[in-house]
Length: 155
Image (cartoon, rainbow, N blue to C red; front, side, top):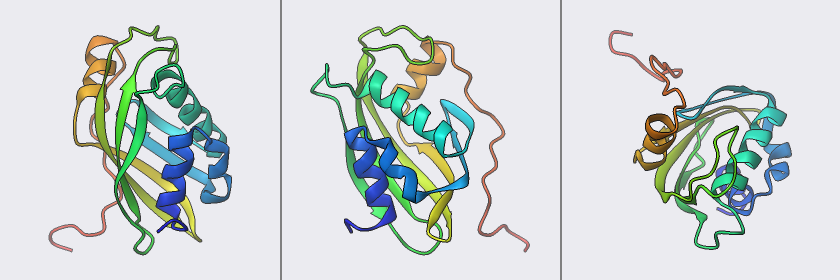
């Protein structure tokens, strides 16, 4: 498990070491999440991850962390599920911190080619963080999202 791609992504994110994603991300990587749309390329994703970690999973708030809940490394569609235990204590893309805290259970649905992530979709199972950022803080919530399907009825 520790050598699997999803585990390595989680371990780096949990520690705030997003540069450790370099060997895991394809140059074409695109990320879609409820609070970050059309993030294109490894550097943009790392910049976003660094900003998120700094604002919500900060050393100044030791109760915050990113827990690994589940993972699968099967085929070219691995995934991992995390529980973000967050506190907004630093600026996040112009949103001043409020000190609000909560949890967010999220699944990162990955698509890989050649052993590297080309697509990273974030699916929220709980809406604490999404509601905070979209409802209370004014970020836009995505609509009409259509991930690449494995199968569809009638095909």
